[in-house]
Length: 211
Image (cartoon, rainbow, N blue to C red):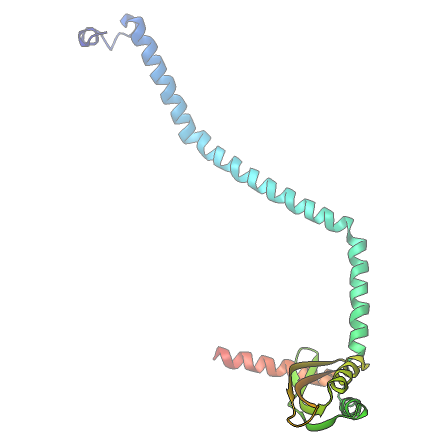
């Protein structure tokens, strides 16, 4: 094919075009139609199809999760009941505020019963949480290694929850005894009035921060 062949073609008379030009033109027209169809019709529909496929996958995943929850619903209810029962037992281990002095006496009696000497026993300010109060107690006691170990064991065996932290043991010069300093924490649950006051104080603090 030469340039002179194209110059001889009458573009107004398609019937006179050579076969190769008819085939080429037909092919270009088909490509143009396909490209236009894709651009103006198929492209947006294909994007919608991909979006729907993603939504289908998400819905299927959500369905499978809900199906698993439905199948295991009885087991979840049983677990919830066990958790509530356990929580109830733990809650009973928290004294109310009227029983706190008795608990402090129990702690001192546990130490004295093991022959320890109290150098410091100082309850700190109670810190309130959602439904319970936490009272740290700074204490320092002296005694033998075994006496101190038994004292700690006695605290762990109390019917009420008592924790020990910041433990430090220091030998007392000239003796076979040790000085133990620690922070014990006792807990008590808050009554309804205390919980309400705490909620009201929290709301007031939030309003102050917004100003």
